[in-house]
Length: 377
Image (tube, rainbow, N blue to C red; front, side, top):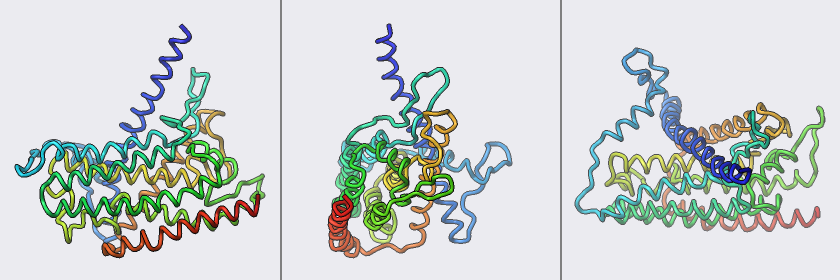
């Protein structure tokens, strides 16, 4: 009987986490990231933005917070047109191949420490799959997203989507290299591929970009960690810039550049298939923000080693989850701010930045990190 309960518990726990994280957190965050982008861009451009949709059949607008639900309903009810000239099977497959990898990568994302619930002896670990090779899993799955975009461009059987698909594949291949190389200094410093372990070390010793803890009111840090800030800052800049390119966000949105390619790879798409591309982009942005926070900004941990990881009480477990999502929301707002502040690159500038600058700088940064670690033992 005990073994049966253990098996049931091992099956139920990840299912609950998947339902809560994906369907109750990530997907609503995707919808409201679109709303936040529209409101934030309106603020930057001194206009109003969506502010009317609220509670139906009333005059209560709630500052337009019902807008994502209205947009979702519009996409569901729109007529789904499939042009006669497309390659139908791949045309239908492409949107799913864009959305699914973005959601799969959140399985290894530690969105909290532990959550000690009443009536349970053991605290829940706030990660769906605690893999020892979590970072490798992320790169393996996230790289599949380009197949959806390339398929969309090819299956549309039209020149503008095809050019967008080719641009996207070239861009993602170029920046995946610098993205992967930028993470290696983190792995060298923490000596682990497990994302949860990396965050735990940052909780105990200080964040990667803030390597300071407090003993009472006295700051505690090591000279080695301060020196390592130099390669870590370089890694952070390369990682974040490459993340913009990987998620096709401005100033690197060349695959869907509307001034040249109409709408790029999703020109021929409408209704929910178009919505899946839209949702896939924002889901990738949210998950990418989560990994940036996890690797460089302490994940769910508070600064200076404050608080606990949730094993002590329910309160600290909820604080850790709230801390993680507050950092992710801050990073999303940074994404939005950059989009509406910096003009689009030319395509030759985009490729030159990836191959001529980031690739070499990332390689040098690995050697620099290795030299510092060797010098300080």
